Image (cartoon, rainbow, N blue to C red; front, side, top):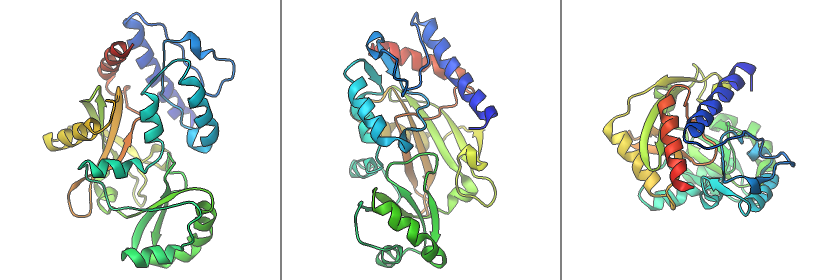
Length: 280
C-alpha cells in the first residue's frame, strides 16, 4: 500500500483500539503471521487488515485451524471459512438474496473462455478467482479479447476455482454502495466510484470513496443479507449495486477483513466495541 493509504489504515485501527480501550479492554495490533504471538493469552482476536491472506491462502487456512482453538475469533471461524470463497454467494442466492448471474468453473475443468461465453450467451464479462480480494486476477473480458486472456485463464483454472459474471454496466457510472452492519444492524454507508475508464472501485486502482445516505430499500437489503448468515456477524460490509436489469444486487458480503471507514464514522467504532463486549 502507498504510505498515505497505510497511514489511513493505521489511524483506522487506532480508532477501533481506542473505542475498545474505553470499554476497559486492553488491545494490541499484531500481524496474523507473526510466529511469536501467544494467541492463548488473548480473550479474542478481531480481524482488521489481513489483506495478504488470499496470496497465502494455505498458510492462512492452517493458521486459522490452530488459532481458532486458542482464542475467540471475531468474526467466528465458521463465518470466516464460509466467506473466504465466493461460492458463499450461491447459498445467499438460495436464501433469496439477489446476486448477479454467475458461472463457477472448478479447478481442473477442461473448458475455454470461448466455450463459456458461447454457452451463456455473454459478450461482456468479469472473470475472477473464487478466493480473491483487491481485484486479484480480475479481468474484464469481451469477445474480441478472449484469445489474449486464454493462456492466463488456463493457468489459473489448473489450480483454482474461478467465476465468470456478466459485466454490470452501471458500476462504471454509479459505482458500488458499501453498507456496514454491526451486530446485524445497519450502521453507515459509503459509495465507491471507479476512476474514469476503469471498473474497479478499489482505491489502489484510483477509485474514490464518498459519504452516502442509503435509501430504506438499500438498508433493508443489507440487513436481510446479514440476517441470512449464521451466526450473526459482529461486523459485516455489504457491497451492492443496481444490476443490468435495475434491481438491487449483492456484489460481495465481506465478513473477514473489510475496510469499514471508521475514520469517516468514528462513532461506528463505538458501536463495534459494544458489539464485541457482548460476545466476550
